[in-house]
Length: 88
Image (cartoon, rainbow, N blue to C red; front, side, top):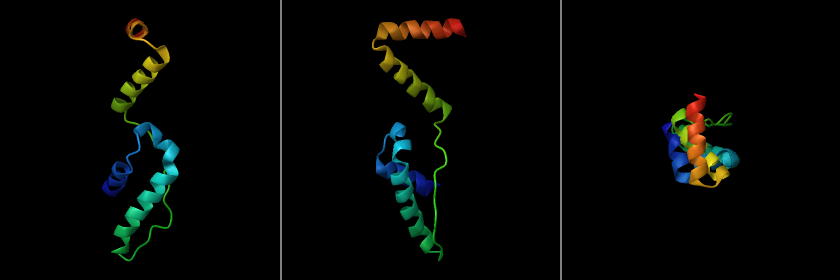
């Protein structure tokens, strides 16, 4: 998996844009891994990404930024935060 992580870093694709660039990510990862497999006389014939899920500690701030963008100003964000606290 470290090779896959290397590929993600080298592609310089934003986290939120990775699902839309899945074919590019898969092709680059397969090329990178095949180079390593070739040393063992193996070839990776097929590679797929079934699902891409952000960890919860990354997802929360992304969701907050998305909500802020939809709201448009900090005053509205404060109201949202208050409503979230009251709702909990």
